[in-house]
Length: 438
Image (cartoon, rainbow, N blue to C red; front, side):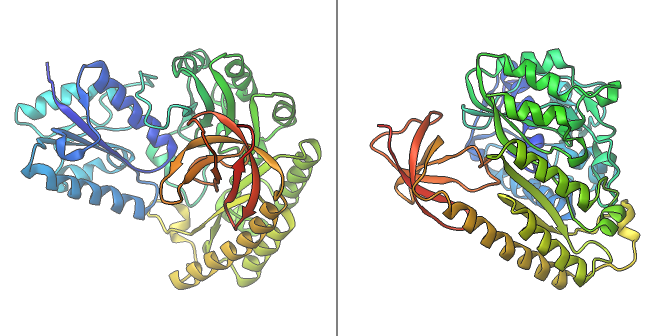
């Protein structure tokens, strides 16, 4: 049996992170050692992203950089995830630095493929495993924060997006398996539900079961709180809003990707809904759940976007007052309908518009955070920031890695535990304070 030391570089989104954790789980199950120091690895796995051209370049560069360890202990490089899933026919003959290629569902093929590689073959194992397998995971996040990927693929046909071509149609994972996986994760202060579109869970089987899933996971004693990401606006139903309002385990936070507010551009993007419907949704959410935190993402510089539509988006931001936003310059991706659309916008204009949008949101965020001065907030301690010589954590309105944080002083704070922090200062994204309950 193959006994090697493994290292991993995992790129891309939190959904891809879960896929990487399944590979690590298979390595652990086989009794092999996993090392954090890549110079000690004999087998290096590069778990790749292919969503945008920049992500594809980053993935290939990671393989090339990983190849520099060949002069030491490194013997094999495995390339897994989205990049080989979509582009293996081009990659296999060209990226000779890699020894094994695995697709998004090929975890069980890892060791057989490596055995062949050690016997002298270069191995393309993409698509060698059929069906979904919720295999054991080795969690790579802090012990108190974990992700649960509830589905893969996508029903939506956004005209700028490659995901359906990479990951296929939407596929919900069986509810009983997800509940068992959540239970197996052990004590978890914050469980984050993710998918390309979490709110469509179950619809591939004919019935939306998202709220049912939330309720079942909420009954688990080892799960303290649940955070919802990637909730598409047209699927934020009255039932889901009621669950958010009434379920004490659900953090009062929604990530709702919009991409734009212009009805014309939304139609060109292949997005459902309209600005009027979005405004009505946010008004309802804030009426029924006054403390709710709202996050979203927008694409700037989509083909044919006018200056007037750009200004319309800035006005929309000021009207809705999101707690947090991400802005991305449109990336022209081959094999998407938007690639051939007329009115492609110059990169310098796209970057200028993104900068202006961030400036608007920065002022909104600064004002919203200033309102918290003097209040006490429950903060989940994530550890120590040694540069600032203080603890760092997050309130309910701050998701890990994408939102701001709370920096706080305290005589003592334990990672993974909630403490009360009095807010003394705020900037555009982060809060600063001191612990009051010890």
